[in-house]
Amino acid sequence: MNNNKLSMLMGIVGSIFILTIGGIAFNQIYKNHQANELIIEKCFENFDQAEEVVVKKDGFWSPVICEKK
Image (cartoon, rainbow, N blue to C red; front, side, top):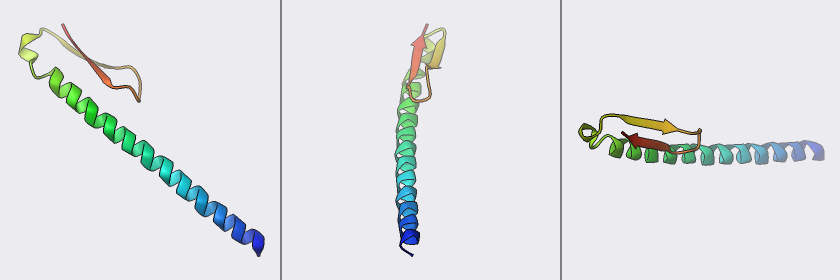
């Protein structure tokens, strides 16, 4: 009986931990998405003054980079 309660407690704590990590990751992805949208919007504000605009991203967590040529 005691072992069953321990397993239940470990399952609850593990579930809360997984949900917390998932929530933090989702929040960070959302913040990165909003920041990238602002960068892209500013990149294309004066599009008529540039011949070419390149939007690059180095990795999943990195912000986008706007290069006007």
